[in-house]
Image: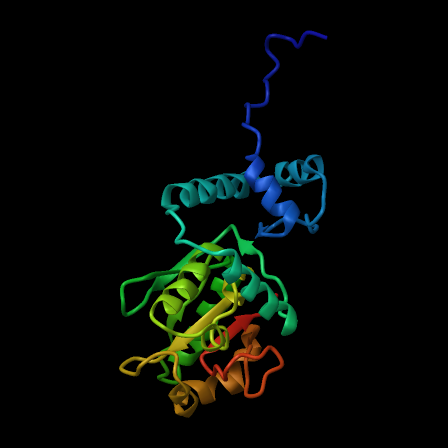
Length: 242
């Protein structure tokens, strides 16, 4: 059937990149707004799910993908032995795999000038939490937020290059693919004029306030003392639980 001349055709939308479809099917990426999990789904089903997103979310996903491509850098050398050590540690400690968030929202810069991003729902919850803390004269800095699998790998390899053992590194940092920071919901907090990422955070008014109030905003401390995941005690690391 030939459409009438005055019938408006739907604007052509280019197909979703195969790399995105593969990542969603493998569980390496996550897109906020999809109504069902895409792990193991056929490409046709993933395309349909993406096409069903509101127009503004489709635009956001495409822009996010373009940003990833534009900012991508060459990976540092990774040996097969390194990858095997990471995977073995993750399996032995039963670490859940973590896919990368695609839709991210800027939540500010830290004392080092680094930009931090979170999933929109986590960003909104963070704003409520920080606003409430501010009413008690408590300033909460974000010192770490979303990290990609590639960024996580660079952190581990850099520490190894500086002489740390894998045992030391993996007691603090999760292997790529297993860090809560990939989800876009995890945050490392700090307070002004104190060195970040140390147990000293436990003795601050900020930590005391978080222990009482963070759950009201959907945040939990991921790694308490003697946590089953095998990480060191991290009073600074909190994650928004969807």
